[in-house]
Figure (cartoon, rainbow, N blue to C red):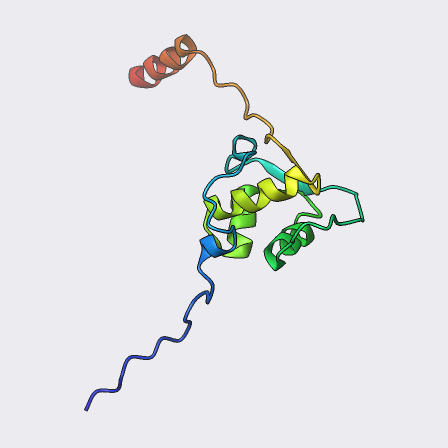
Length: 122
């Protein structure tokens, strides 16, 4: 007789969107793309808003700057849920968000074409 299937890790007990009160968008959603850097503000006094354990964990892990993708990974939550939680914290000025430094500029098309032509001649 085969043994019944037993899942080792049942996963989260609470559905992710329960953490956001069913909200799927934040007022500050435009402030958070995947590579935006999130950092905790220096304000030691937390407001009286209802902070869940996820809000507090974000405050803890963002003592040094982390990207939104890293925060989502650390919390093991979908990025959209994390964006809503970050929006809550940003609204109360408990975190700050800044765009990641832009990458270096790519060379112009003319230069790339010359390099390709040179390689083709070899």
